[in-house]
Amino acid sequence: MIALQAQKGMWVEIENTVLQPGERAPHVPEDTKRVPLVMWVKGFLESNEAFLGDRVKVRTLAGRIVEGKLVAINPRHEHDFGDCVEELLQAGEGLKKELEMVLKEEDSNEG
Image 1: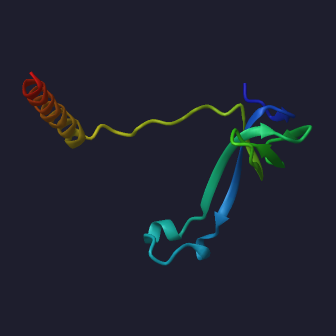
Image 2 (image 1 turned 90 degrees about the vertical axis):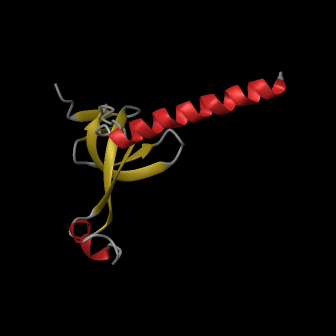
């Protein structure tokens, strides 16, 4: 069940629009220019209580106080490193082999 009300000190997420579409830098891609630049910040609710959609202040783990629209209560950690990139896997394997060769060479030079 999704909580709709948060109490002071609860872990929450807020949202702020940093730039409107017309304020975006001229060199960004066209599809990017058409949407606002939005930031999300997680922190501890500073207000006594708040409902989703309320404008609130949070205290971040770094101690900053940030104001924004309450969009999540006890938000999930939803992140990953994206799809597998075959070229990076191959590069990583190649680098490991090269490093092993360098370390073996250093060992043989010390002995």
